[in-house]
Image (cartoon, helix red, strand yellow):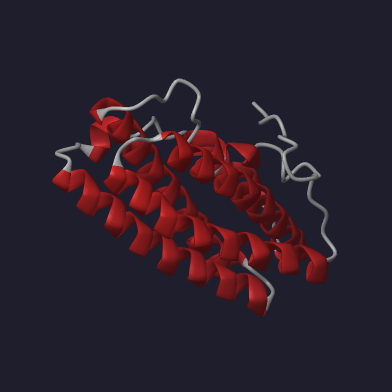
Length: 181
């Protein structure tokens, strides 16, 4: 499906890679910056779902994403403040075109594309958050990730239910779609 292409860039899994992340304050800053970026992207996706979603369940999930990722971002910001991390400087560059395919979709096409993208996104998010948690030596960051993972798992489960109810298809867990240019 054309709409789903390019959506693989969204979410924590893409921005929270553990390759090259060792221990230390610089790595904590990088993870916090990437978490902040991911939360911002998920908030935008949630707002988009509330605006463009056709199904009541898609709109409701969008609202949940906004609420949960706003709360998560407050925790990220609080830890960043404690660790004296400038989130703006630590955040990876935003790519404005990442949501373009989803913004172009309408009606039922939007709903199925959104559900599939969120399933794929949150499957990768959970794996990436667990990997970051398991590799960090920063106890505060580990605690933050421990509190984040169950929320991401719940989002993944909700997305899976939406995929099933809408009859959309998502690639198998772990399969990464290449973004379109």
